[in-house]
Structure formats: C-alpha cells, structure tokens
Length: 400
Ligand code: PMP
Image 1: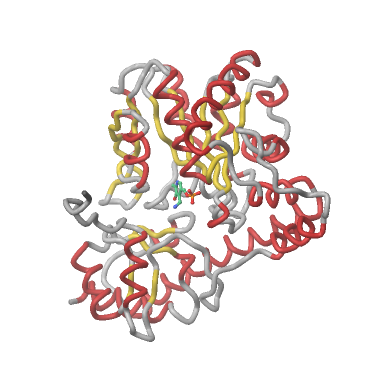
Image 2 (image 1 turned 30 degrees about the vertical axis):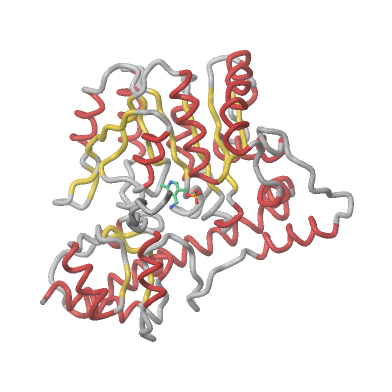
C-alpha cells in the first residue's frame, strides 16, 4: 500500500551533513549545520552542563515521572527571566505565560498553532531570507506565510527601507517573525535605533511580534545585550511571543529544550492563554521531556553555575569572532577579489558569504568544503587549522 510513496528530498540544511558524511576525503570540512565545534573540530559539552547532570544523577530523590503538560515549572519561570530580564514588569505583573517546548522549533510550532486557533489574523510575515524551517513550521500550523524585505545583497547589510515599507504595508494585526539576535542565515541585525523604529511602526499598526531567540548570548557573548530587541517590545506594555532555544547557548542540541513565552496585557488573560496552550500541546506530544529542562533549571537557579555558564558561553562566542577575523585576514592575505568586510561585520554563528550556488558546488567538488547552497557558512565549524583551507577554496571559487 505504500509502493506509490516517492522519495522525499533531503532537508536543505541537514542534507549537507548527509553528503559530508559520505565524502571519504581527509580534508573535508562541514560548515553546513549550525552546531558549535571546538578548535579541535569536536562537539562541545559545557563543563557546567556536565556538573549539573552529575548533580541530577546523584540526587536519588529524582524520579522519572511525567512532567505537567506545560513542563517544569522552575524551568519556565527561569527561562522567562532569562529572556525578559530579572526586573521585567511583565513577569512581576504575572502577564507572561511560559511553557516548556521541544527546543526552538517546538516552541515556534506551539506558538503558531495557538495563533492559528486564537488570533484574529492568520498571516505571518517572515524575513527574506530566513531560517529554512520557518515557512514550513508556520504553514503546517495553519498560518499564511508572507515575507518582508530584510537583506540587501548589494551592501550585504540590512535593507532597512525595504523592511519598513513591507511592514508598513502589511495589514493591521499581522504577525511578524523577528530574529531576536544573530539573524540566521545573514548574520545581519538591526541597530538599537533601527529596532526602535521597527517597534514604533509595528505598534502603530498593531502588528504582533513573534520573536525567535535561538542565539541569546551567542551574538555578543552577553545574554542581556542579545535580549535587548525583545525587552524593548515588552517594555512598551504590548503583547508579544518569544520562542527560546537552549540548543546553542547551552549546547543542548539533542536534548530538545526550549520555551515559548506569551506576554499578555493582563494576568487573567495570560492564565487563560496558558489553559489553551495546554490544549495545543496535549494531543501533540502530551508533555515535554524532563532531562534537558532539569539541566537548564539547575544551572539558572544556582549563582555559581550561572556564572560558570556565562563564562563558557562567552568563550564560544569569542572563538567564533576570532574565526571571523582569521578568515577575513586569510582572504586579504591571498588578495581574494572583493570586499570581505561583511565576514567581520556580521553577527552570530553564520557568515552569509555572498558566494553563489555554482561557487558553493565548486568548493564542495574541488575542496570538499560543505555549506548550504545560499553560501551560508557556520563560523562555529571553523578552526585555526581549517581557515587556510577554506580561504583557499573561496579564493579559487572567486577567481575561477
Ligand atoms: N530558529 C533559528 C533561527 C535557528 O537557527 C534554529 C536552529 N538552527 C532554530 C530556530 C531551532 O533550533 P532548535 O529547534 O534546535 O532549538
């Protein structure tokens, strides 16, 4: 009965790793997936995560019972505090409901399903370009996806005018997906002044902000700085949604731990919203997994562990920034034609190189360097040892 099923294409991002794994070359380099690697090219488990896990294992009172539908209560409170700020009036006034979800993706999906059922507008505006999973997550949740101009290939920066025009002509009440920081794939973020213009425009048109925060702490190395865009919107007293992921900033990729917060105008509204979120979650996966959320709660709750985490997080962010400089210097040293300053200007895990699909294919075939076809490279996958090889590959692709 399934013989008619046709082969589906590989996921455009995860498929890069599938191709990479098949390549026998000893010099192969995977810059496709946004997962942090050490200078030695190895995945990293943070020391503080190991410590928290040890503590959890040693605690014989811990059991494996189901969590509530909305997840671990401490985790939810601490996650809201982390993104909105310890002194957030919205938290103090009990206007925020936070539910533990399956990492960033699950948080986006639960938020979108909620909006499809309970919000009067079903159109969500996403930046052009954006993370490839966004349109699929929102469409399958029942929303209509439209895009707004974001990136300007000519300047390799923000198309701020285009963004303002597109959001300015969106119908009142539309939902707008915003990357809280370290925009993926472009690495281009609005300045604080530009964020303020965006906020004013959106509030004046009653556009509903839905923040995707997958890289808090990864952009600047500071958890507070990377949350400024979200906090600006919460400070004005209006509604917003935030999807948080601990995949990158705690290195908990496979633990699938994240949170959806919905900031409302009043405590009774937040409480009713939470009751409806439960109805979204229960038939999807009943309740979330306990382990990852317990690790996060253990770390966020303990002053020492929290500090240790911020130090390790800063070290990851700094290593990425160093790789940007090294790659930029290596291209300059080779005299590679073009202005490569965007490599050091862009923010977060990725550089949007500006390489075209043919150049990307050439680098894969001749240099065994793997990246997504849009020319996005994960700086977190680079090391001092591999920068020269990448610079050679880019130089050859550009001067071919
Ligand atoms: N949003 C963005 C912008 C991302 O880059 C990612 C991860 N690549 C996610 C959400 C979701 O990641 P996860 O589900 O692993 O937390």
